[in-house]
Length: 459
Image (cartoon, rainbow, N blue to C red; front, side, top):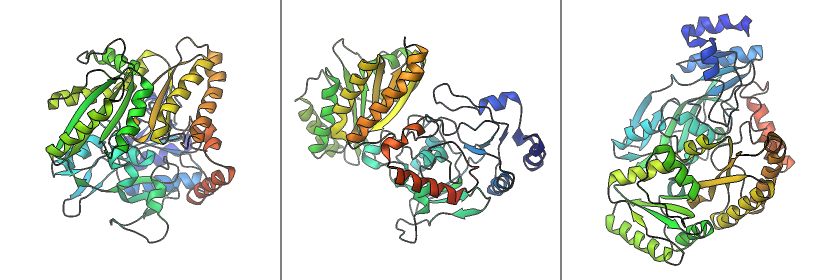
């Protein structure tokens, strides 16, 4: 790399970084305890600079890993050893909010919550809201096809991406589609880039569709004495014709650990509370939402629950959502852990929870589960606790393979929103036959024949 540093310094000046502090900073994301030092960190601020970087790296066979806010949980932004970390943080402008067409054009380094608040001022709504929305970048959301609590009603990132400006590994710049709601013109390159985890191209501009922002919402927290019954209630609510805007599941430990982490004990968790559902409905008519809440309560009466908490102020709503969003951070403070991001058809959620506990019992590990129950997406945090290093490093991968095998048998798959990245690639054969993996590898080769862009991820 030393022989190439002069080129990057000439191009980017002080935005080409080789000091140890920055190399360490960009060596990891939020995935477990994995850290791999890059040789240099590059911070371009224009599409032309990205193009020149990629063309040079293509010519000289240099590995490049796109880097956003590094909030990912699958190792997607972790660079390869001696490779380049290509930070997109200077691409931080919202270029245009098109109120007439309900669209926004943004650069990838804009924080998701900043984007949401900017369009909300215009009465518009960008629904995908991962737990890290206050820090993650919209470009990372596109790369991972992020979801979040609102996905149950509104869909995930892919459902809002209309068009992308990208730089190919060769340095060429293209737009993948058009700024229209319908497009049947050729292959859908836009959706191919969405969720590709930075392995096919570098995203430099994003066009998103927007919808009118709901004016009303209601939120309730329901304690269950059985975690399996909490999961069963999810499907029952949908069978009644109700589509909540949020349907979040939290096991007891997920909530109590978060209370300890935040020192917020405003929610009373009784000794017999095994799990909670956080249920939100939203829309434009308060009376309609109240009717939905009454229907939900009628359904819940058929399960073993305790007193339901209705959030009666915006402050209480914010507090409840804050607890839910901080579960991941809270679990992380308790122990070394691994987080699996399984997703199954929501009717299978009780069975998935049962399988997780059975496998944990067989292999001696504790798990804390929470997630987006409304769309069958369960985050399974496996706690190292008192497991030996041998159990953790040698036996746990076998347990995870058993878990994923059962998930696929249920009609589910390995990841709902975190991606495959570095840590789940060894399990891809469970989800796909050899021919499907071969097709994906050939697509990668078409975009990136030299394999320089985010190598070692997914496959």
